[in-house]
Image (cartoon, rainbow, N blue to C red):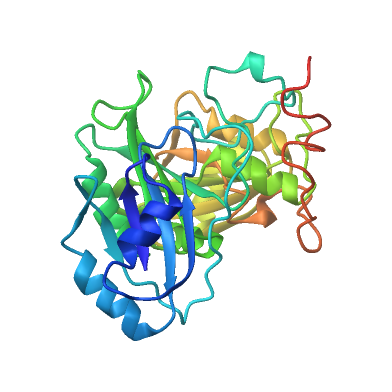
Length: 331
């Protein structure tokens, strides 16, 4: 069983006693705080038999623990799901941002308080952008739970940004249980109803570190040679897309996708920056493509000028050997 919204004061011993109050035998229990910004915990509880799990579910689904009703659901054993590992390292911060910008230095003093460069091992985080201003956590959780379960955490946030139309300056961070679940969410929801769903910058940095990828420009951008554009009108051809993006550099390929998206690959990385920052925007058939972003390299490693070769490298002690430095090292 998966349990969420567990009060922070609850210990493993407390949870074992609560989850076995009907006499069911527990074989394994993992209570996970996640990041230090969370106001609750979650847990995976394994029972000896399916019958014990069903009996516990029926008993506990309407019970309260320390005055709070928990979210409880069955886990599907047929899925090969990687469970979150008990994390370590810096806390997960509330900041992120659309695009692929990272900084080449790892001095945390240069970042706002709580800013996260990397995620603790095992955590998978998505960022959802261009939400309505009045979007609620529960509404977004419901949308994502229609695609994957469990959704471990949802945080809807707002940021002042005069460049965005009124009412869409809202974004959210979604924590899911595995990389596979993250892929499923993006493949299903990115571009749907105008939303942009991609792996968060913190997760992208973590992924890059695992693959030994480093930023190669002074601005700290990865060498991404592909952009993703949204809002493509129905009936648009690849030739029309190439024509619209050619002013920013030589286009190698334009790959039309569903939900009004297109992937445009340039020969030079500088062209992607020009396209993303086009002051007047990019138009096809008098229709503005918006937004235009650096392609998420986690979803599409081919967007990198030098795609990773081979399996991910084994990560060393958290925060070391990434981009040439150690998290927290002076300077």
